[in-house]
Length: 281
Image 1: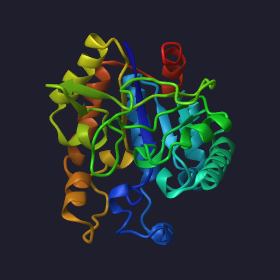
Image 2: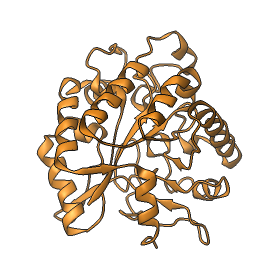
Image 3: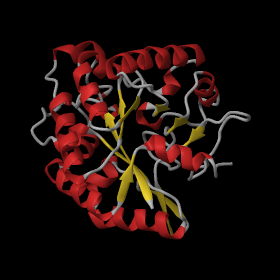
């Protein structure tokens, strides 16, 4: 079973956990570590022989266009993560369309690669924005990986399908939710990120095996470049829960990723989208 590995390319200060602590207008003056961290991810993938998808903020791509070209040169996919990590439910339809167009133009110009995939910041496509998939379809995106079919204090659409589905009638657009597992009737988050970093590696291995073997579906896993950077600055003013989630196990993340690349087969999200679209309802 070929699974999909993805990287949400944003810097340590752009995460949802700090959005009320660090102002966007202060981003430019902060220490930027996204280029060095993404290069470290590229090196890890090269060692493992893995190809992946890099969902990248337009804000990052316009400042580091050479990084986008290195991602493409290494055989990976560049996809959109919006411009500056604003959640989709903070937009109206016209604002969302403008954000999609702005970020896509920057990404394509920087990378030289067509952008056909999108992931909403903080998985913020949910029942509050029933128009979002229609806008993505109208803008010509082939796939979205923007839904987390779980309950979470920051995001989630728990009654959405767990596997690939077509959200717009008559459109080939396919939604590829991040991976979840089932235990005692409950749906558990198992798509990567903080769940992968904080929980024992054995949980993620069990969850991916369940999806691959029992459900006969590929897993879709994500993480961020800052998650392999234990030397990043600390944000003292952030809530305790946010700091715990953000900083725990940073030094262990690279090793866990290496185990993940050895234990399963991985590819790009665009390739998985083509296969899953054929079986999506």
